[in-house]
Length: 286
Ligand code: PDD
Image 1 (tube, rainbow, N blue to C red):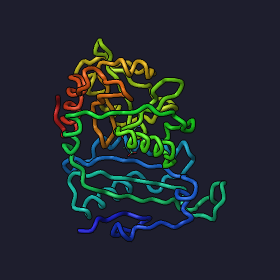
Image 2 (cartoon, helix red, strand yellow):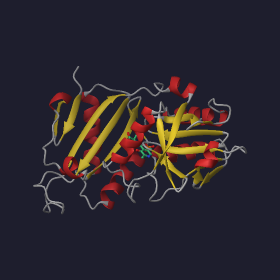
Image 3 (tube, rainbow, N blue to C red):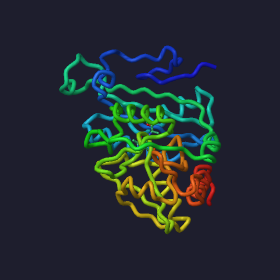
C-alpha cells in the first residue's frame, strides 16, 4: 500500500505529495515542525507536542494552520488512511505561499501544512540501545532561538553529517565548552554519584518532550536530577551518558569523541530509565 501524506487539505500518495516552490518553508525555512509517536493506536505525549507546536508558531508570529481539534482530526485521519497502529507522525507548518519577499506575506495568506506518517516500532531501537551509541562534540553554531522547533536545521544537518563521517550516531553541540544538546536529541550525563545532569530549558536548547517525560520517569524512580549546563570535560569523565528524543527514546551513549564513558558500555541508570520510559509509553508503570 502506498504511503499517504497530507498536503494542504488533501490526502495524496507520498510520491505525489508536492508543495509550491514559493512556499516560504522552502525559500526561507519560514516554518516549524513536530515529530510525535502513535503507540498502540494512541498518540503519545500529545499534549506536550501540540503545546510546543503552538508555542513555536506563537514565537514566530505565525498563524496556526488550523484549530487544535481540526489538526488532531487530520492526524487521526492520516493514521487511519495509512493503516497504522504504531507510527511516527511528522507535521510541518509554514507561513504559506507568497511571492518571494522577506517580510511576512499579506494577512490572510493561508499557511502551509503537510504531514507524513510512517511505521514506528517502539522496540526498533532496542538493539542499538543494547550496544549504546558514540557521539562526537561539534561547535554549536545555531541561532539564538533554538527553543523554537523551526525547520531551519542547517547547522544540525552539518553536525549530524560530521558525526556520521566520524562513525558516530550523534553530535553533541558545544558552546564555550558547554554541551547544549544533540543535533536532534537532548544530551544527558550521569555523574559518579548517580545524579542525572541535563542542560536547563531556555533559549539554548530545544525543550524535548521526551526530556520532560524522562524527567518524570527519573522522579518516579527517585533518581537525583540537576538541570544545569555541563561541560565537555564533565561529559568525558561521566559515569554514564544518554540521549533522549521522540525517535531515540532513551539511548545510552558509550563514548564522547575518543573518550569511553564509564566502562564503555550502557550503564544501569540509562538502562533503567529507558525501560521506565518504554513502560510509560505503553501506558504501564515502572
Ligand atoms: N528531534 N533537540 C533537538 C535539536 C531536536 O531536534 C530534538 C528532536 C530534540 C528532542 O525533542 P523531542 O524529545 O521532543 O523529540 C532535542 C526530532 C525527533 C527530529 O528532528 O527528528
